[in-house]
Length: 216
Ligand code: AP5
Ligand code: MG
Ligand code: ZN
Image 1 (cartoon, rainbow, N blue to C red):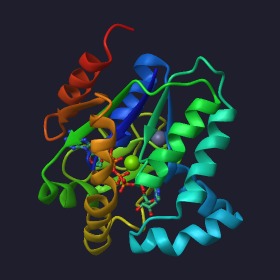
Image 2 (image 1 turned 180 degrees about the horizontal axis):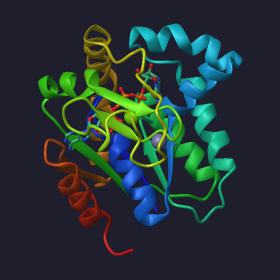
Image 3 (image 1 turned 30 degrees about the vertical axis):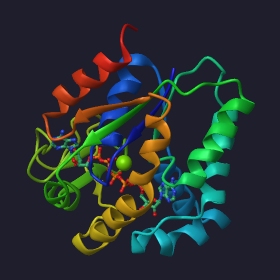
């Protein structure tokens, strides 16, 4: 099964993808995570992407589609994939069709997380992750059980994304509205789109997605 999680910054794409990874053994392909890894490693892609990401704008279609193709080639063909944060433009949606067809994969669901944009700014600006294992936390919604210590790995270092400030978030949302939301009709025409209330509790959003994906 191959699915796309679609929604504006902070909608919960990463949160829900990681639930599906642990529950269903699917693999999460997040172009945001891949780009952040490239920036950290200082690769040519990372050097190109850094300023664009810091500004909250979109990295070029060629770069992200190449990353997705390379990542898929490393997976066994039967592995189910969750596309998180890709595609984000009409050109990327077209590339994804070709990338999947070349690998005899089909797209099964496009799940749109419907959210209230005003609430998202708080979600994003309060977000932090464990520097060791990547577990996600939030200043107001999900603090570690023991202050300063990761629940999962016991790590004591945490980090915040440089693009998680109120001003950049507004640009990221504007990019979503202008370039990403308009790709939904492409998938609606193929009857692939399901909508989920992304403002519900994390567990309820997960249950709604599980209902759409059906039996394991
Ligand atoms: P990317 O990393 O994809 O960021 P994004 O789309 O802005 O989305 P986020 O990761 O911020 O949000 P999310 O939906 O994953 O929410 P999360 O689960 O963390 O992209 C970053 C940048 O990379 C882009 O701006 C662009 O420059 C570049 N890029 C990436 N892909 C690209 C592409 N395809 N083309 C071009 N450029 C690309 O949740 C957020 C917070 O809310 C967390 O703290 C979480 O705990 C909390 N939370 C989640 N769900 C709930 C809930 N139901 N209730 C309460 N709190 C919740
Ligand atoms: Mg994310
Ligand atoms: Zn950890």
